[in-house]
Image (cartoon, rainbow, N blue to C red):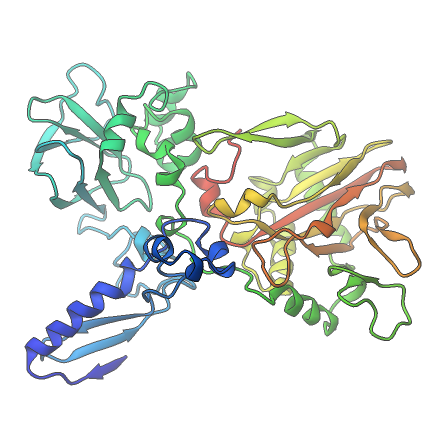
Length: 508
């Protein structure tokens, strides 16, 4: 902490005001593609829009310093690192672990939470009523009048997670309502939110269990599924809009990417010096520098032998042995951010998601930690393992793990695939990269070997927001035996929190 003597006090206050105008928590990107656009030169080519929507990416402001004034009139410059990791909270000011202060809910004296209400709509004064049972649509559900807000005003209230507030005009007609959700420290009454409340399509329950689930506090415990399926019972209709629900700067996630330009090359170079695993390079930019090995000149593709122990692999498979179902592909995305699932015509395998007991099993935790240690990317950026079973004749034709539209998601695109072989296969079942050829003229084909990890990037080294089309790959048909494997997909940003909020695609 750096103290700067400023006299008189007025000078310190002026400096603090100027700093607050350009720095601190107000310095945010309001679009999930800001980073992608910035790396592609849009800060210069489209400066007015980028300065407004992406000031952090374009260095128009800074989150890394705040200026405060002490009681003695001394200005205090305090360095901050609040975008890059867990935010220290020695005084237990906040209700949970914070990675983005914009999602911090301050703790009240009664161990509840604080929520800031803003009146930003084009209507007149509104009355704010408090309810704890979420029954704002039921006859007679008036609630307790707390205070009145005029247009442009804001007010902080102390409350608890799961409680509900109703906002009404002066005649008592409900304009909007909201349930207090974790890491949602503000509610803005807007014209769009009022419209959403009255939209029967946006504000509806699509599952008969919604009222019961809401009564069990599932709106707080599983907000993504509940917002999408039970927005009426949860009084969270405004959150069905992905632009409100899924903006990265409003989620409790780190705001820095896993990869910056040059990161892919740096990672694979670090693998070359690894003493812990027997690393084999199948492809790399420029091919084999000594011209003695049949290494392709292409994107990095490597295997790490004995990466998963036989015991860990057996334990992971045991936790999902009764859950295998026909694999599906991703379909279209609707206006609420929900992605449909379709039965795959090119993928005949079966899969099971390693969630719940599987994800918490010590073997899964150990393997995840091992991947984190190798890549340097934290496990919150990982999807749950997708465990795969390929039986006789089953395959997955050539495909890519990254979609070019994934940069729009709060979690960003998949940047790496760690593919774990959990069994040997007597014949067939290789992973083939049909666009990458060795000097001998053969494509890269990796034979399934129990315990081996196959790793490749889905993105380009010089632009980790851009798909590298050369890493299309296929699972060749199993000719003899059964192939068990697991995908570990690693994203550019935190995947766990956006997934909780239903910001990563499918919800079933």
